[in-house]
Image 1 (cartoon, rainbow, N blue to C red):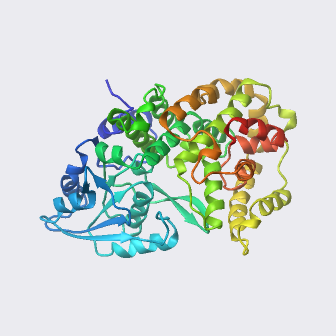
Image 2: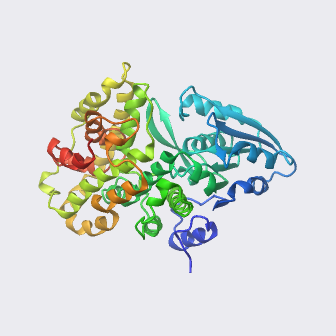
Image 3: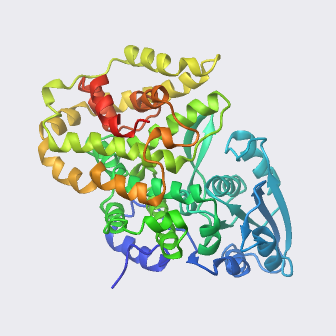
Length: 472
């Protein structure tokens, strides 16, 4: 029987998608290979050869290995040396260590340009690192005409290793842009288990958004704002979430089986995003709260926290909001009002204007806000209908959102922070509240906070209630 929760069975997943998507609305799953094992690091040359063959390249090839300045060890040996040693007898290999001057690499335009310049003339790219390094590599391959990329995954920190988009910084604001599928992803469980503890616990925080974000995606689809929703994608997400993560305690200690399960879960999440042509399927209220924190820290030239750790805490907020909308009569059609564009622009300017003197951050957010308002106006009749029939939709919403009381123990057991104050850097109550209150003003995606705001329900009282258990 086909196991659609297994991201390494790419042929099986493609078979399932062909069956469930006869209209071919979904993107092609263009991963050539995905391995999650304790010997995946030994498969680099094999992955390189297969990737070159698919690209029509034979003979000795020119390969660029992209890394950042972080030294990654595997059982006392430098991983980049282990990878290079497999390749150099068969191909010409050159290593480029990207360094943007920050403690951790930022996927901003300067870094992306440097990566694209570094791979000019190459036949294939190998990337070694966690999520940002892989995203940078995917953009470099895309800008270079679709060079094959072999991604050596070194932490289970995010789900972006196995999709065809990249999260980048544009005008200081995090944006998701199209890039390229990697050809092969090699996830060595030993290396991942030896990664800094906070990277994998952050990955678990990212993973639990599986139990909140799909509801925002489904809501946006019901309202006519996002036509990427597909039952096949939702079936894959439900398969991933079929069992509660009772293994989360093993993430904190680096236990091999827990690391394997976390890596597998994140890989499937990435594949679903890729074939769905959107990260919206797994990026709702909780993700944009995390993006808000990143925005603040980047604007003030401060260290940016781990994305997944922030998402984990924010998922508890999103869960409380969603369960209240599902389980009570909070949503009433008579409260619904169209947003006023002028008032919305003033709110966005007020929310983001203090972050830079030029006003470019607020302008970027307003640019996306205008797009969202245009779609709202175009689909207003859908808003009226959905709010009138809200109770009937709550059956499906209820299947997509787990209560915070269920998510919190798993998050705590994994070692991931469960309050804003426990994050690194620690988030003050004032900053956390700013991030939650204004999260729906940042980008053009629609989520529950937008709907609550349009109904006059996005009040200080509701926000304080939703944040009560995650404040320091």
